[in-house]
Length: 145
Image 1: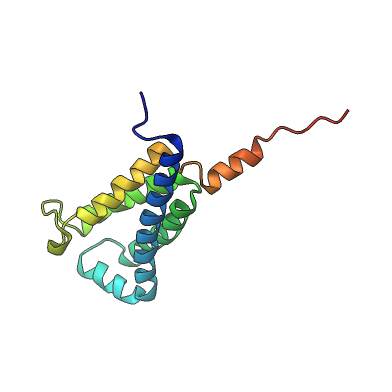
Image 2 (image 1 turned 90 degrees about the horizontal axis):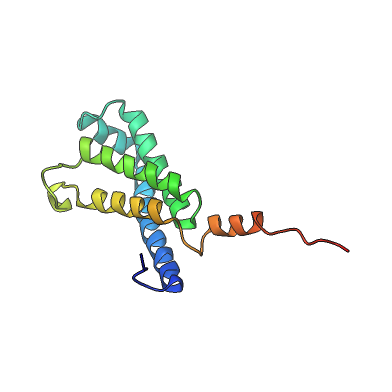
């Protein structure tokens, strides 16, 4: 199978994807953090089970998962956790029968979930903390004569 773009361009595209997706997640996590009491009230009104716990989990996933994705660290785990959380958002918050976010539909959480899954499948790319750590870990020791 051939790549649709060159490896250097793919690496740049993955950085852009990580920064956009991570930025969106961090932004939503910050919204929850700065209005946490309101988020709990909203989750309670929507009938979300254990609204305090659910709000804390959603905020943490968005902040920590968004940061991990942006940095390219633990991308596979972060991507899976984010995608699972977004699936929960469809079930409990956003109508699975209405697409548009203006109608409380699933389009934004769906796009976030698919982006997270795509990064799970591809990895973070060359320009990431994961790649930097892997390169440092696999650098052979020089032999002294």
